[in-house]
Image (cartoon, rainbow, N blue to C red; front, side, top):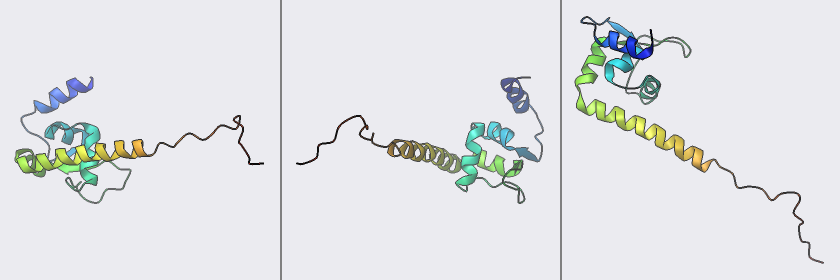
Amino acid sequence: MNAIAQQTEFLSWKIVPARLDALQAAWFLGFEPHEIPMLVAAGLLKPLGHPARNSTKFFATETLEQFRRDEKWLARASDAIRNYWRERNARKKNGRRKPKASASQPTLCPA
């Protein structure tokens, strides 16, 4: 089953599980799956319990339902994602180095 079919099936469920993984949380909230870690890093989403950095993160459906209805939270979350990409693109742009003078060009020395 491809991702679109999985998402469509998930969104058609009448009863949603009490906890959702990051992919399901993204579908539930209307965000892209890669944006969930950005929201966690910004402090706008909090995973259940105390998961290790490399473990699966789960989110409470009840909390996600509240966020889903909260227009102010959705605006803050959208702004956090926009700011993430703006800062990342600025780092990439500012991280470019000036090209060095090539070794084949002679340097002039005062005589």
